[in-house]
Image (cartoon, rainbow over all chains, first blue to last red; front, side, top):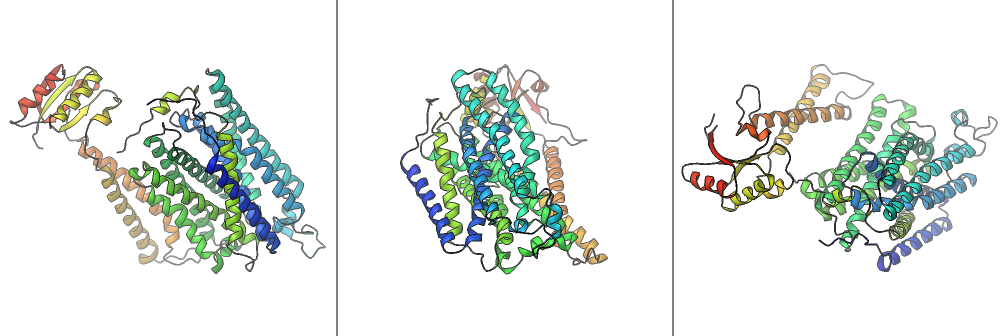
Length: 405
Length: 171
């Protein structure tokens, strides 16, 4: 096989047109949402999608960091895909911060702790529990925390991207060793602060409720949806004639990852649910009780079907993990499934039963953010060759082969 | 114990070994197994071996484990002495999940390990089938099950493809 180490993705044609159309659909849907008076619901949708968008971009960084820290070689030849994900991070950080700041100051987001007068004992809105948490849960500190997370994680991601591009030009082991160091730093910081980030973004939607499982549960969701996005991008690129070096073993590994971590996500989901169900303490169970109402009960259980049973059964045999079409379908299902997971975290606490719905606003906002992600990611991907040609493990990755036993 | 006769070809180079495997297989002989002192790259692409049946054993043991755990918990909590824990029903399936999961994994892994040892005669008390001890040192070994008919063919195939030694062993 003649290997073109300078092969580069060209971002033109259909991919560009369709992602721009998707962005337009998103903008129109949000506008329609506001115009038809579904203000709360549209804000909740923006929160879901902006959070999901940020999470998937950081999943790319997490993938790279783990490959470096684990000294793994197999993924080197597809490492430019998660690297392209990290180019979205600066945009995602700005979008998330802008949305949350606007939502908080216009009192459209996080009603549960952000109502006017909620910490004032003389106000009719007074809530003693929220007042007790207000030392941590107040708008300025909330935004400072968010800015810090985005700045520190994003800074490391941008720096690592710079290192890999420099390595392309200059070669040598120096950039690889530095990358390992910064990846380790990222893993430690991200691992400890991501749960706090998810407490802020998702758990504080219902600020009375608490769950120590929540951060890991969200991290598992981030990771499995990010892996699905990486697998889907690799497969679509390969189907369009790029990356001829990707073989069945690479797809097998990505399939393994998706299979393992959708099970891991279920493990954490169950652990969180099981403890609350068994202990049966009112202040803990009301969160699940809300999702047990007729409006959400079907979706509550469907969440398990789409995020656990489907990938579990579809990806169980090693033959299906090596089949690109099967892995592609599983990846799409996981990506949609985790939108539903976030929907169930945000909606019951954000909108009233009458406001709830699932129609063009939900679909349109999601399509819009998918378009935005695809557009920014492919733009980032087209700026560098598809192979990190001076990476020390490149040769190992090109000959990656695992048995189908 | 069954007494099967094997023709054993010893090679001293991994490339010649891969050639030998190809040659033996191309002439319609089924290789019983190949023994090497270290993993040989490309061996799995050359050596035609029937798919392992170990996953089937794992599945059966897993089913056994999940049934045992379910029966045990049902007997303890529901049937023998109905227990009231936190006002929950006496048949709380949700709280069975962790133990069902753990017993499935436990039975599947131990069962798979035992099956592997049994099938390869590595269980204490059984005589392991060692074709040639040098397979752990500096020789690559191909073993083919032979009878009176194909004995000569196989040994000549070994010699042609560059084996340094050919011998027979009954185990």
